[in-house]
Amino acid sequence: MAKLRQDPKTGCFEWEGTPQELLSIYAELKQHIEKTVQIMDTIPHKFDPPIPIHTSLNTEYQQLSKKMPTVDQLMIYILSKPKFEHDIVDVGLKFFGKPIKSRKYGKLYRELRAKLENARKQIEVGQHGAFERKSTHPRNLQRYTFRSVSATPLGIQPEKTS
Image 1 (cartoon, rainbow, N blue to C red):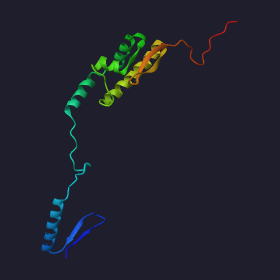
Image 2 (image 1 turned 135 degrees about the vertical axis):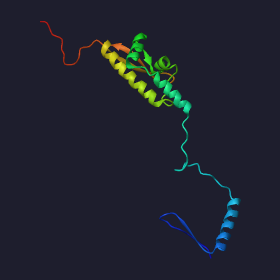
Image 3 (image 1 turned 45 degrees about the vertical axis):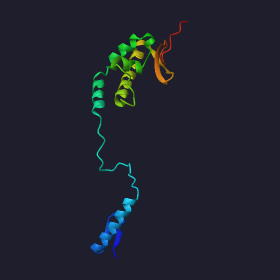
Image 4 (image 1 turned 90 degrees about the vertical axis):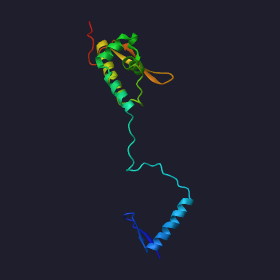
């Protein structure tokens, strides 16, 4: 009589029996498999080839990264706006010709945001003010508006005349 064993440590199967017994078991299993419905698993395995990256998106990303503005260019653009009002969509349209979305161009979007933040800080220092952030509808987009501040720094007191 044929026997089938599975090694629990390695997961390997061992067959034991005469060749005739093994062939009859194999034939019965084959008939049984043909009668049943096979469901393929959709879980990727180690040996599955990786999904190819679309080269069109990659080349588009490279072209857009060449158009990345410097902090000085961003400052000039923001200073040219009334009340220095801007948002990241305006900046994307100006320099890239289209809005830069964080889901599609993640690294590019983060780099643009960081440069915008640096430009805002330099403008705040140079123009003696601060940017006010407001949410806009319907996309909950952050819009920045500049407010001038006339205040003395902490620790410096104006002299009193008596």
